[in-house]
Image (cartoon, rainbow, N blue to C red):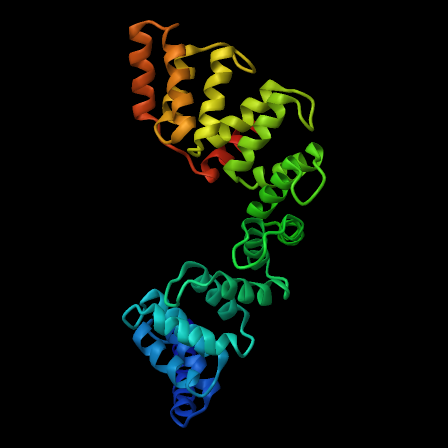
Length: 330
């Protein structure tokens, strides 16, 4: 009975596909678009990007905005057609001008990076604004950053705060971190360490390593929160394990001074060495100087061991670190 039912279902599915193809071949744009989706995802038909492109193109040429966007996406990724960013931009624009928000966003990205179109920050801001005003959090973040740096729009910290806040309230970790920085530095908003901590924590708890380091700094300095070296160590370590050089340096100095952890020059040397391996400019000079001072308190055997630990160290993902925190909480 099961086999018979399954066979009947397959036959019905084939009949549906054939009926859809018949409509598409007769010029039905909706059927053409749906066939493109089916071939693109392998739903009811074998997955076939070239066939998806064929049907998307037919629907796109009839003015279907979603088909124009998907065709642009295929050109952008080089799926079913040779990769062609210029052609991707052409189809994105057609869809964007019909109000397709995904196309508007992608067109903004292309103008921001100069991929497939001449780089034009003002044009990028124009398209990001269209999407941001419709509530898209990523576009709000991008527009906030353009106001912060003055790219394509006049530099305006208060306007940056406005857009960061919109995205932050939708849970975008990078926007939460950026908003924390604005409160931390008193740019576009009154300086308020407690408010900065609030937004840093939201981003840090989502795994954003830069926010974790900033939260560690505030706990180490007692700014916006009671001074708590153990809590500072916790956040520094999470960021350090994700290759944030500043956090690796900060963690190393905490080990060197015995703050929040037992004094341990071997661990201090290892973390400062890791920081020095990726830091640049004045920070690299600082890291090298600190490592030398730490090494002066160590034996040659301890230095060799610290160097070995640094060579063998591997970064961890937030998922790995989060799992470890959950295991420790049990």
